[in-house]
Length: 177
Image 1 (cartoon, one colour):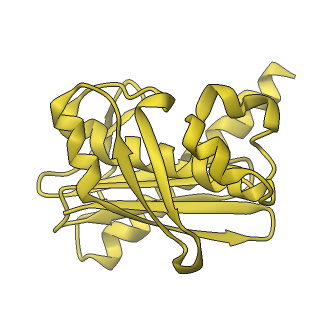
Image 2: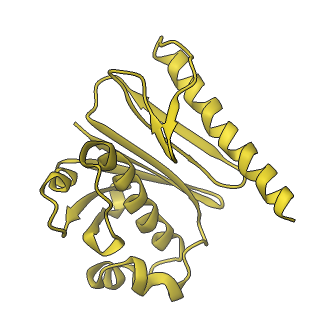
């Protein structure tokens, strides 16, 4: 069983890296493999990017003009009501009341995308209760209010995010100029 899980993890990891190479190609960049420090990708000079994968999908984004970028993909039903108190602020929980369960996955994924966009700039962990998602449901977009005390993370408030749902998944993208 453990061997099968490791094999699946390697497959999804390599799928994410494949998406990075495709993005590099689209931007006319060298398709050299990106490095990593622990679990954090090291992007080529002058670029920012993000990778996400789940068991059956992978996505990557890369930019030569943004200050930060985060992408995330999640299964629509991944976030159960039992987890809401741990990962959502009181305001977010109120906003999610009465909405389909996929709305919780969008909110969680938005937090993940925001974290991925800001971490390379601030090098500071952000707890789930430190970032609050403000949804613009009809536009399929969101912004982030930073509630913590680490000043560089306030930059999150200048970004904009987008989300889409497709069948069993939600995907978010968060951009920092």
